[in-house]
Every structure is written in structure tokens, then in C-alpha cells.
Length: 287
Image (tube, rainbow, N blue to C red; front, top):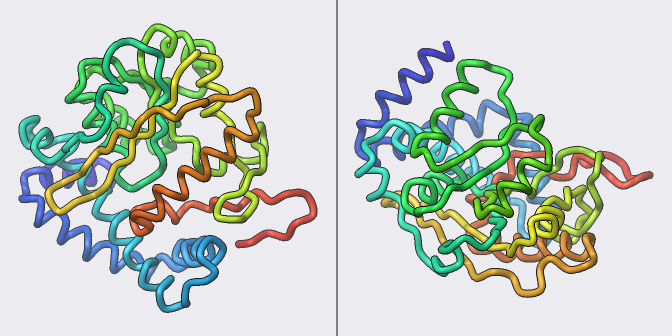
């Protein structure tokens, strides 16, 4: 079944974008109604983060989230199998591009918006630097190989596994390979600290501050937005005074920036994740 799925994605790459997105819209609507446990996770996240919203508004956003997640998943067909010229045409990099030129050590803050793979593809295809990121192995070996090949498609990206350790990542960072980092998920209590996210204490790995300090690197946000013509990859200016000597303050600041980004497109954030699964001592589970 996994091999058939990969073949389907290869075939889908040749459809016009409007066709891929229409299929994603349909898939998202279906998943919203049949994947009830994950729908409940989305609604709980929205209740916690947007308590002032009406239930009707949160339900509408929930449907939009499932659609965007499905569309972004199917977009990997042309990102990883479409003609390079088509990929370049559909990925538009804008903003403070000078932040990614040269060889200064740079950590890229890339939050979990649905277009995260589009952002990575745009950078590795269109900018003349070697980028790195951290990869978690997938249990399904066919899917794992497919994702690895897709993310390595344009040759300028190196994927570190968890087993490679911090030393290798920091070494590449200091040598001038920007690190595309996605630290805004709940990876469990180990090494996490609790900082506010939309006013709720969230277990957060302080890896953005840690890697920036170890690599003597600046932090540059890269936010990817799905558009009708593909994706816009917005490079922001480097954060001044980051990292500081206070890792907890840095991590709280990261979440404040993240909230600002989410507020511009809440329907494209990865709310299907159990962001608040880990709770402070004494607090009841929220899911």
C-alpha cells in the first residue's frame, strides 16, 4: 500500500496545481469528518489558544486546518516529483534574503506551518548555500525512504538523524551551513521547559536558543505561506539580541514571535499536534 501511495504521488505531480489543491480540499473535508480523535485535538488546541472565539468560529477554522494539511501533503507530489522549473515557478522567496547570503552561522526558525517542506525545498533549490535540518526516522520504511529522497532532492540539504548528536550539527552550523530548525512542538518532558504559548504553559524544547548559542549564530525566521499559485517563503530579519544569557526567556520570546506569525494565518498552523500533551506537575491532562 505504501508503494502504491508513492506511485500515486508521482502521478499526481503532473496534474495542474488547481487539480492537486481540489483533491486536497476533498481529502481534507473527508478526514475532518472521519478522523474524529484528531479533530478533537484540533478543537481542544483552539479552545485553549483562542478562548474568546465563538465555538462556530473554531469549528470553521478546524475544517480549514484539515483542508490545508491535506493540500500541503498532496503538494509534496510536485515538490518532490515535479519538473524543477515547475517547482521554482510555484515557490516564491521574498523578504530579507540578505540574511541568508554569505557564510555567517545562521539558525533558521521554521515553525510548523503546513508549508514547511515547501520552505525547505525553496531554500535548497534556489539559494546557493548548503542547508541542514534534523530528521526523525519514520516507522514505515517505504515512506521513510520517500521522504528522505524528497528532502534531499536538490542536493544542497543535509539531514541529521537524532543519533548524529549535537556536536555534528553545531560543527556544520559553525562552518556556515544554516540549520533549518522546527522546535515548536511537544517532544515530551525530557529537556523541555514550560513557557507560555497563547497564555497556556507549554512544554517547549529550548533548542533554538541552545543551537544559536553553541553555533555562535544569528536566528532568522522563515515563514512559509500556502497561496493559490504555490507558496510564498518569507525570510524575516534576524532577531536582535538573540540568543541572550537566559534560555527560558529566549524560548518564551520564540513563542511570542510564533504567536504573531500564527495570527496572520491560523488555518495553516499544524494544530493537529498535541501541543499541550505534557503538563506541569499537578496539572490534569487537557486532551
